[in-house]
Length: 502
Image 1 (cartoon, one colour):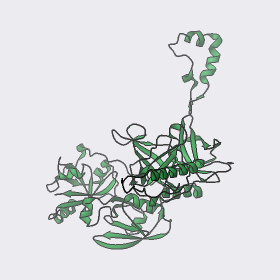
Image 2 (cartoon, helix red, strand yellow):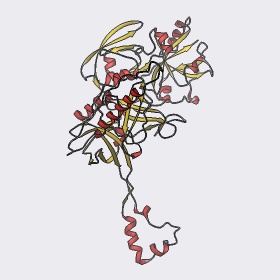
Image 3 (cartoon, helix red, strand yellow):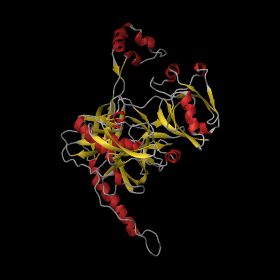
Image 4 (spheres, one colour):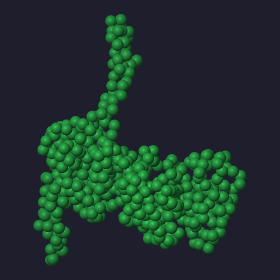
C-alpha cells in the first residue's frame, strides 16, 4: 500500500481476471404510468450479468507467488535464548556442545514471502495477463485455473512502468481466451463487471459503473486509468474489468482506501494500453517506447486565458531536452502541442500515450500553437532511453549561502537574484540552467498562492527569455499593463508555467 495523503491510501488491489462473453442489454425501459423501471427490464439486466459471468469464469486464474528467500545465521535460530533456564543444561553440557556448534554454524533460510493476485487468459497457448506488481520479485508463480488445475509459470515478462505483466504456463489444454474490447468506447456511467480473487477467498463477481476516465493518482509511471465503483479489494489485482458484451476493457490495478478495503474508488489500466504493452512483451521481451524529450503541463484555466485557448486543449512545453527528438524537431519552450500523429492532444497523459506507441525512426506531423500562430513541425521518433526517469524533488535554498545582490520586485512581491554556477550547484540544478533564482516570497501574496517558492528558478516572463536581472526587469516592464504575469519557473522536479495575478 502506498500512502499519498495523510488519511488516504492507494492500495494495489490484487485480483483475478477472466474472459467474458455475453449479450448487451438495452437502456432500461420505464413504465409510462409509474415512471419507474419495470421488473422485466431489471431482470433482463440481471440475466446479462449472469451470462457474462458464466462465460467469463473459465478464463480467470488465481495467482499465488513465492518471494525471494534470504539466508540467516543459525546463531539467530538457536532454540533457547540467553535468559532460558535450559541454556546451561544444553549448550554448556559437553555432550551437547558439538551438536549446538554444528547447528549454530548451519545457514538457514528465512520463511518465504507469499502473495496472491489474479489474471486472465489472453491466448490458448497459455499466455496470461496480470499486473507487474503481482509477480514482481517472485521465485515461483503458481497459477490455478478456474477448474482447479494448477501450473507453475514457465516465463514471466513485466513492464513496471505500466504495471502490466504476461506470464506463460505450459502443457495446459482446453484453455479459453478472453475477448478484448476497446477502452476508448467506454463512457462515464457505463455498466461494468469486475471478476477476481479478493482476499484469496475464491473467484467473485462485482458490478458497478465507470465513474471517471483519464485518472492519474500517481502510483505508476504510465497512468490513464478508468475509475470504477465496482468493488475490488486486495487480491483482485490483475483481474479484468468487463463491459456488458463480456469484453475486457480494463485491468484492475489499485484502490483508493481509508479502510484498507473497498471504499468505492478503484482504478483499472485501459485495455488498449495493456494490449499494446503485452504485445511488446510477447514480441520483444520488453517494451520499446518512443519518446519526445519534452517537459509538459496541462492547460489550466489561468493558462488558457493567457494563451487564448480552451481549458484542456493541448499541452504546453515547459522544457526541451538536449539531444532529444524535440530538439531535433526545433520545438521550443512555450509551444502548445495541439495535435500529433493525427490525434488531438488533451493533456500530458494523453500526449504521453500517443507518443510512446509511435514507431521508432518514423516521422510524424505535429501541430503547434507558437506565439499565437498555428504551425506544423515534422518530428522523427527515437527509442526512449532506459535511464529516462522523473527528476529529483525540490531542494530548499540555504539562506546562509545566498548572494548579497538581491533585487526586490514589488509587482510580484518576491525577491530574486542572479543564478550563479555556485548557487545552481547548491540548489541541485545542472550548469545549463539559466534564469534568476527566487530568494523570498511574501507570505499571503498572489505569488505565494500561485505556487512560487524560495529556490525556484524563473526562466521566462511571457515570451521574454530570462538569463540575467536586466532581462527579468525587461520582462516585467513588458507585462506592466497586464492583469497577470506569465512565468516559466523551474524546481528540481522540472519546469512549469505559472500565472501570477497583479
